[in-house]
Image (cartoon, rainbow, N blue to C red):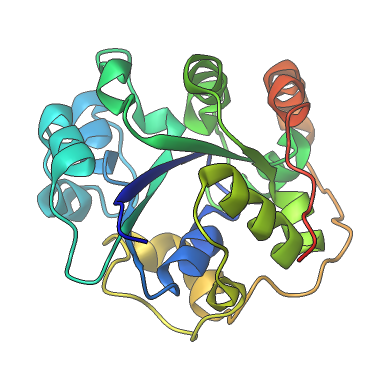
Length: 242
């Protein structure tokens, strides 16, 4: 590829977003960016997340500076694809979405009950704003783009990644299906708090039907997410054969 491609993958927490970032980073033509709006989000909201001070020190806290780099900054030599792993809850109302218009957009989902059961193991009292699903729906309605359900991705990594690449108009690379274990220099400074399972992985692993043990106090929140999830999931990609 000679054309530079900039991909914004919009996801919530606990949706295979870091494993999917690993898949793209294992391509020799791709550079990845890990949650570039995180420091802005923490500085603007005052929220106390694990490693908050380190996160704020590691990135610009002005969203305009971040967006300029994401949309127009140079790519490293040899890279023709910039893959941006975004958390949708980091996109606060003051962020001008028009600034992202030139990117190729994609969306990574997870069933709300599964997502919350996983998230609650790290933060026990999540709110709707923490999950970013309403922001994700707003971004999807504005930009459109391919939708990947994390359950489908686990069932058939190659087929779903082939379909995603086709929709984003980039060639599929088999290197996306596995990667070396361990941390990456591209990981955010928050990795020690969140990335242990990904650092131990070498691929997406075999699919296992999830056993959802959702705390009872989160059942209403899962239901509150359902309509937004269902709207986007209605557009999710089907696996593509080689």
